[in-house]
Length: 103
Image 1 (cartoon, rainbow, N blue to C red):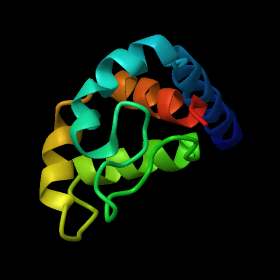
Image 2 (cartoon, rainbow, N blue to C red):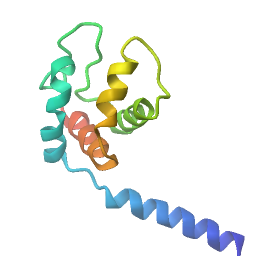
Image 3 (cartoon, rainbow, N blue to C red):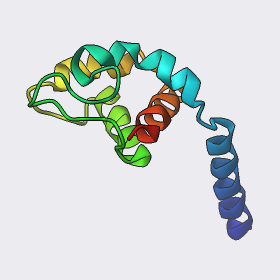
Image 4 (cartoon, one colour):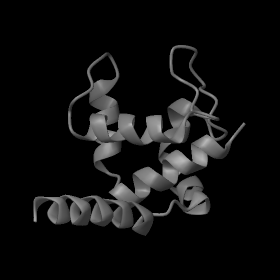
């Protein structure tokens, strides 16, 4: 019985991830809010800010969720927490897919 519950939970998680299949076009539209610091093309306008173009998609998702949850600290954490708070899980996936698609 425990194995069935575990398998069911894992399968449910997998299907819920695929329910948020990333939409690069939607991510591009939502990324406008990132452009002030990270540039429209994902290349930071300020040398001390990270470039997002070509960044690993899973890393971007993880980072945005961590900012949203208040788990990341640093000089820009407050700003990033506010920006991430405005994003749904679907938005996070889309924005991450968009920036990962840039070279």
